[in-house]
Length: 397
Image (cartoon, rainbow, N blue to C red):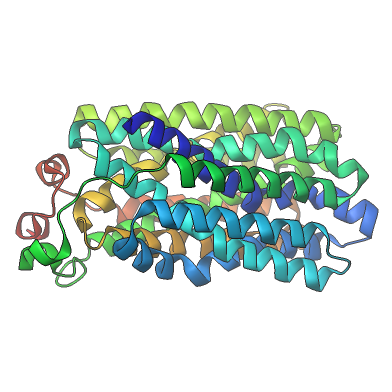
């Protein structure tokens, strides 16, 4: 039963990310069919992420009190309604508002899905299972890259309608198939289990900072990969979207692999540090290849887009294990808020830099974000992580 629950959760989260990130694949259509500028189109693409920022912690609080089934069902249903409203919009302002509201709703799926893993699986399996669950984002994005550009040839509306249908089906699946894990009630919890994990420790804050910094290369490559391939390398939209799909599938497989890696080495943070360092190096190499106009740049772009998405499951697993049953919802909410702020702020800001100084400057600047993340990764105790409980005194030592 627990595997079917994870599968349904994966579907719901993938559908939410199809909506959240799918607008990026409508940028060429917004430019050609509606006459939208690149900066304005990127702003519209960022609106779901800004909506998520507003409600992630709120959904985490609701999750800690009512459970995963309610949050996943409500979040998916409300996202479907907002996506359909955005598809029916006749102005940029109304479309942006609907996308923003949809992001507010989709935040619930992103938070609840991660906590199901810690509730249904033991510590020695959580890394790989969370890796499987975290494939939801790249798979949702891959589906969007495969389907939405083709639909968008007739305008933005068909692509957004597709996202609405997917989220609606996810809501029904969650209502029927999600079962909350058996957990200790709040009334029977000890004082240590109820204590705030942020007091007296910077472990969670450092994980949040690392996740936010590593989000920048991920969102930057996702937003601009199609435009970069079509404008800079003269690819067709279909070919560029196909490469995005391939990179997202590779990233999904990679998340499972690094989850298994973390289970074997007994640490979530050690692999994160290696991933961050590698992502920084790949971004700098991409900048150099763009300056020299090397054909290897396309392969480097794929490498960056894959490497940049490998860390999410590791950080989410570490947070649920450190924060514990009664704080993990809010901790994941704060974590995801940090990530979505970066995801929302990146495309509009970097579109201005690209317009002024071209792509190499953007890639080089973006490489500084994972480089900074590598220096902030906490040396979290493996035995605390493997215990799967919040042993506060050991973790803070």
